[in-house]
Image 1 (cartoon, rainbow, N blue to C red):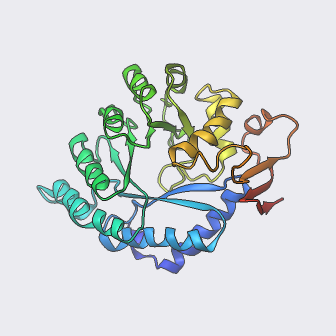
Image 2: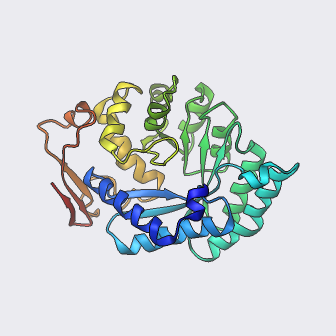
Length: 304
């Protein structure tokens, strides 16, 4: 947080562009980019403004999410009512500002132990909805808080992580429009013992997506093929399930499934070509990038 606050927009933009090029080289054509490492008004707006600039400056499609409710910043944690004061800053100032300037499409909250309570999370998400920011939620990562039930209650586009979700959560997701987005790269990098119960979610009928969760704190990877490998070995998903989760289901969670996410007549030509003989080899060769070509909107954006 300190380093991001101190960084200039040009420094952040340069690093982000380099990361986007690596994403493209591994077959990614659309990403969700979150704020959440600024945690003050100026820094959060700086991040979201860069999302907008980068969307126009390079080919990967960027879907912007406001995650001001990532954790309570240090300057508020030291106060008796600091967390509630910070929530009011988000709901009364930052969310209206983000919405008025068209800086984000979604609003996200980390609802967990050491972050935001279910009540605080609902307060932030409700404010987001009132200002036309669609809800997303970090749910059940470090402990079970009931965040999945909240995600379903507010009709969130997705709830992410879900390591501590249970059978009731899986059933609730299956009955809802909320996508269960699993992030095995985070558990791998942090050496956590319990991965999300992907098989129980799939068997209950929940829609499962996969993502890198690329961030400097818990998941420094830009490789979706590596995420597919982890999903096969650690989440016990089949190769076909991982590809569906990384494409059409992920597109659904971003509200773009009618335009991208699958190869169909009339859809945008977003695709990745891998130099393998069988699709199952994409996750089989873990840590190996077999992406040969990436295309966005019919235009080649990466070629090996």
